[in-house]
Every structure is written in structure tokens, then in C-alpha cells.
Length: 193
Length: 339
Image: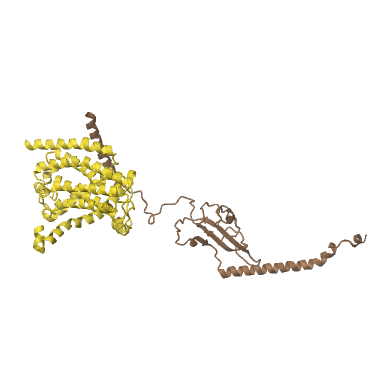
């Protein structure tokens, strides 16, 4: 009988204590972050969307090779000796036209492995993480700064130069041929014997 | 009120219709606000924010948006369900909840039907809700629904007795079953309210009535028939769209009904707490509704404080704790009256 009343007293008391606690929490500031209005601070070195600074890219393809999911595609064209592509911010001379630098961010696994090998530190992770799209094709990011005409132009020039070089080589070869031809022939004396 | 309407419209049917519909003018906005309020209170008690976007200021129109969504939803009736009972159940529950409002005095000038057995009628008619729950649970042809319905039926036999006994203690002092009469007897300052009379017996009776009322409206800690974590959603498992909304609506209507009865019986109903200050029929509505809303808020507060009881714990509380205490109150009040 004693226990019965003690139980009732205890339960009523614990309900009141519980109500006090919940009432107190009514006035505790909420921990919720109102996301699109207030953004949480990203940790240092957070890995999000990739960005390529094309001014610094030398077309070395190291990022493409490092990528474990093959989401980077790069194409380069050799520049002519007369072209001046300028230098990167690290002072390296650019020797290749980068005619294609595509990152399929939908494939990207945000491992950051492409960032480390880059000799000019032109490919890097940014703080942007809101880049959802309505169309899947929009995830293919093109970083190339050259226009289509410029690419065509560069390609044509390179092809022409190649041809010229080939022709020169051929000419050089043709020139060299007569000179070397006699040596290729077996010594007549040997044949005779 | 009725006389006034008679003078204006001179048509009995019209007068009765208007009198019957008047509580709806309060109930519908109340339900919308109360559902929003419950979400906000629950959120803030858990250090969250709750709905914040819809409508601008603290998501005030979230419930309106939810209601519009529910209205547009497909009305699914399970293939194996008993279609007639399944479709009827939400309405039975709502009717049971709404019928109680016929005898609740909103103000000294307005009461749906001033019958001399008011509180008896309310207790009788609100029990009909269990029929609706049982109907819905059985007709759904789903094990969770049936479990919920059975639990609701088991629950009603437990909570109804202490609840009625607690009411009886008040009725003994008042000497009447008419709620309007009971209100008239509590006029004056707040110490005339029945909670403060025959202290502490009526106060204990109020606590008992309030606990039993929580069980009646199937709310935590007595939400055993719904018990999300055990029974999916109990008897509403198979309901969707507007029928689900009906159940939800009926629950909130019921919440206010029991709060209004508690306010009427124990807290002076439409009486101002300060004598004639802000008295009169119009302010009476304000006092009545605010007293009801305070009790509704306490129900919400309790909901986010207490865990759910087990079925056997509910039985223990109802039969072994509330019922003896209610009897003790009735006897004590009776002896006090004899002195």
C-alpha cells in the first residue's frame, strides 16, 4: 500500500519534472540552420566542385591520368614555334594549345587526386557545392577558353605545319638519299669475288 | 442567440442550420492553427524550428498547404477492404467529435442545444468515436488497423469510468447536468470556479478527468491505438487523402471538445476570471476559447514530454489508480456536501 502511493507520487513528480524540462527547451535557440539563407561553414580543404584556370593549364594531361573515374578529357594541339602562348603564373612556358578540357562532374567522385599532380596548380577544388541541374548534359563542364574558330584555326595551322615539316623531312630525306646510296651498295669487289 | 436568429430569419430550419454550423466557424480555423501550433511546439521543444518556409512568417500556412495537398490526393480504398464501412468510418468519427459541440456553451448567449442532460449527452455521444475507430480498423482488412481498433476498444472501457466519475464530482456540487447551468453557477471571480472549490477534491477530479481525456482523444501518452512505432499508424494505416485528413481533423476537434468540457466544468467556461471585468456574451466567447486553447496547449506539451504507455500500463493507471481516486473524490465531495 505504501509503495502504491509512493509510486503515484513519484510518477506525478517525474511528469512535472519532464514538463519543466520540455518547457525550458521551448526557449532554447534551435540548432537548425536555415540552409539556403544561412550556410554552414565548410571545413578547410573541403572538396567540392572542380575548377580549372585555363590561363595556367599547360596541357600536361597529368590530371586526366590521375582521375580514377576518367571524368576529365583533354585534347591538345602542338603550337608553332612562332606562336607565343605566354607563360603560366608559375613561370612555365606554355607549349600546347588546349583544345578540349571537359570535366564530367556527374562522374566525378570528388577524390581530389587530380589536384595534387598538377604542376601549375590550375585545377582545384572550389567551395561551390550547389550545382544541381535539370538536364544531365549540363554536368559536362567545358573549360576551354578558345572559341571554335580559334580551335579550327589552330588545328589547321598545326596540320599545315605538320605537313610542312613532313615535306621538309621528306625533302631532307630525298636530299640525303643520293649521298647515302653508294654506301648502301655492297663493295663491288666483294661481289666480283 | 436562437431568439435573435428567429427574429432575423423567421424560419425554423434556417435558424437550426445556422446554430448547428456556428461551431464549425471556430473549429476549422482552430484545427488549421492547432496542427501548425503542434508542429511548432514539438519542434521548439526538441530545439528544432519546424515548418519555416510556407507562407512566409514561420511557415504559418503550412497546414493550409497540407490540406490542399490532401484534397488533391488519390482516394485509395484497399481491394480487400469492406468498402461501405471503410468509407463510413471517418465520417462517424467526425460526427462523434462534432456532436459534442451541440451541448457545449460557447458563451452565455450561444449554446447549440441547452438540454438539461448536457454533460451526460456529451459523454454518451463522444464514445461513438470508438465505433468509428473500430469500423475503420476492421474494414481496412489490415493487421495494424485491426490491432489499433482493438486497442481503442480496450482503452475506452478503461478511461471512461474515471472520466465519468470525475465529472460526477462536479455534477454533485452543481446539482445539474446542464452545462449552461454549471457555467452560471461559477460566475464571479476565479475562486468561484469549481477547481478551487472543495479543495483539493475537485482539483484531483480535474486531473483525473484530464488524464482520462488524453486517453479519450488517443494522444500521447495514451496514443496506444495509433502507436506509430508499433502499429504504423493504427486504425488510419490504410486511409489516404481526404479520409486521412478527416481522422486528423476529428482528432483535433476532439482535443478541443474535451478541453472545452474541462474548461466548462472546472474553469468556469465563458466566465471572466475577474468578476464583471470583460464580461458579457462576446467576451465570454473569448474567455471560453482561450481557456480551451490553454488546455489544448497543455495536451500538446504533455505529448512532447511523455513516452507512450504500454497497454497494461494504461489499464493499471485507469483501473488501479484513477478509478479509486475518482471514487474517493466523489465520496469526499459527497460527505462535504452533507456537512
